[in-house]
Structures are given as C-alpha cells and as structure tokens.
Amino acid sequence: MSGKCIIINENVYITLGKQVLKVAGGFILPSKKEKVIVREKITRYEKDIFQSDKLNEIAKENNLLKSFNILEEVLDSVETHIPQNCRDTYYKRLKNLKLRIIATEQFDKNSRVIVPASYSPEENTMYLSTKTLCYFKDKFKEKYKGEDINTIFNSYLKRVIIHELFHLASSNIKDEDNSLYSGFVNFDNEKYLVSLNEATTELLSEQVLRDRIFHQYAGYSLQMIILSELSSIVGSEVIKESYFKNDQCNLIKDKLLKIIDNKEKVNELINTFGYDNYLNDIYDGLDTITQTQSLLLDFLEKKVNLLNTYYKFEEADNLIKFFDYNMSYLKKHNLYGKDFDTNEYKLMNIKKLNEIYYNSKLKQNNSLRIRNKKRKTK
Ligand SMILES: [Zn+2]
Image: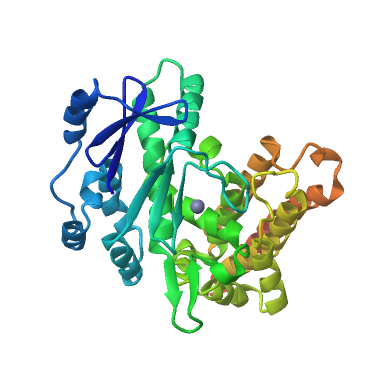
C-alpha cells in the first residue's frame, strides 16, 4: 500500500492507493469533493529520478519509494549520511518497505511519549499516526501564528520520516547470535541503550535536515546534548559506524579506552545511556544526567591533557567551550532541575569544568614558556 501526506489549506491529506483521505480531528475521512484538486497538487511534487542509481533500481521494485512524496524527497540525502560500507541494509530494506497509516495515537514503548511515527524492524514497516500528526500541526499553528504552516509542517514531517529511515538502515539480524538489532539496541534485551540509540538516530536526522523544530519537537533533546558531548570526545564517525554495525558500542568503547584505560569506567559511562534512564521525564532522570555528565568530564579532562601535550591548544579550548555551552544550556533551560543552585552534586560538575579549564590554561602557559626558553637558548 502506498501513501502520500500533504497539507492544503491547513488540512492534512493522505492518499492511500486510489483514495484521498482528509485527516480531521484524529480520524481519517474520505474527501470526495476535494479529491481532484488534491491529486493535481500532489503530482506536482513527484520527481522522476533519484540521484542515486541504486535507489532508482530499488524504486522499480517498490513503488512506495516514488509514490510517497516526502519519502521520495529524502531518500537520497539519507543515503549520503550512511557510511558507504554500511549501506547494504538500507537498500535491502527499502526494496520491500511497507507503510501503514493509522488513525490512533502511538506511544513510544519505552518513554511513553506520544510519537508521530515508528518503524518496526520485524515487519519492515513504517507507521504514521495521523492523530499525532494533527496534534503537532495544531501545536505549530499556535506557536507560529501568521507563518506558513504548510512549510513548517512539511519540514517537521520530513524530519520524522528521516528519523525512521535511520532506524530502518540500522536494523539487522546478526549472524553471530541470530538476534535482531536496531542501532545500539538488541531486541532480545530491548530497553538497554535505548537512550543512546534514539539520540544517535535524532542526531543523524539533524545532520540531514537542520531546522528550527529541533529542540521542542524532536524529542530526545536532552539525550542529544549528552550524546554530542560523547561525540566530541570520540568523534561522530565512530558513533555512526558503531550504530550501523550494531556492535553494541564496541568501537566507541575502544576509543574511550584510548583516553582512559579503565574498562570499568568506560562501561559505567556507556551504561548510563542504557535502559530508559533519562527519557522525557527529565526530573525522573535527573541523577542519571548528572552522573553521565560527571563521567564525561573525566574523559574531557584526559582528552584536553592529551591535546595540550601535542600543542593543540585551540582544539583543547574549543572542546572546553563546547562543554561549557552545553552545561549552561542545560542549566538555563532548567534541564538540571529546579533545585540546581542548592544541589551540591550538580554544582560539582560546573566546578569540575572550571578546574579543567584552569588546569588546561596553566599547562598551556607552562608549555609555551618552556618552548620559548628552548628557542632563546638555541
Ligand atoms: Zn526513534
């Protein structure tokens, strides 16, 4: 079954096969009168060809790829954001990807948060919830009064589809244990590493489509901040590869071990990303965030030291600045919780960062002094 989703005159329309359905108040209603007009507008969005030969080949087998316009618009750019040696799953799963449009609400199994879409790796099916899409459309109407809601909603929907496509591209049955993985999540041990998995999926989506909808509507914004810090330590390529190869963080752990050679500490950090620790109820997850942040600061300290040893002062400064920016953001938006100023444990992280900065400057000045002395004596 194929489908398209489009807004005309502030209504959401979805086409399913030959039917054009108008989505209203969470229910799908057939809209006979507007059928023809909608058809004409939709065809204008269709394009004949993908940039990638491989995708053109697959589109011949699965017409959903070309008949669902938003999917069609993003397939090429998602492909370019998957490492070249990890694209086989993307192609294989796109060949028989199915789409189901549902009128009821969907909830994320782990976070209990309302979600507009989901991907089932077992069924290779993408689900879109029209009820939730309508809910978000109304939110945008409230928030962006007088602006072009069509454009805003469309880029939101694109972002949603891109996110699900990354779940698709990272879902594999591994030969070693004949077990189903999606990114960092092993479906036999479902909840573990789910925070890391969703944050990585969302960060990848952000790389494809940058838009202003990010913080309020992307969900997982808190996890993304923490993940971006991890990424600044180990590099985003390592995280990507580990995610697409479903290696349960082995590549990330190897990188971390090169910075602090302590398996227990590395595992402790990765474990704080596990289960449904800091999902959307931020106050529930308070202690986990503080703990993750504290562990990340230990790795930051060592990394800054290493960079300073090789006279990479600017890189070291930028890394500290990046952490400072993130931590101020968390504090400003109250993501650390209301009791921040009186809670010593949380203040400790700020103190820790200040110390790292102070020690780094000290080391840089010393190194420069020694280097200048050497030059003078030559
Ligand atoms: Zn997701």
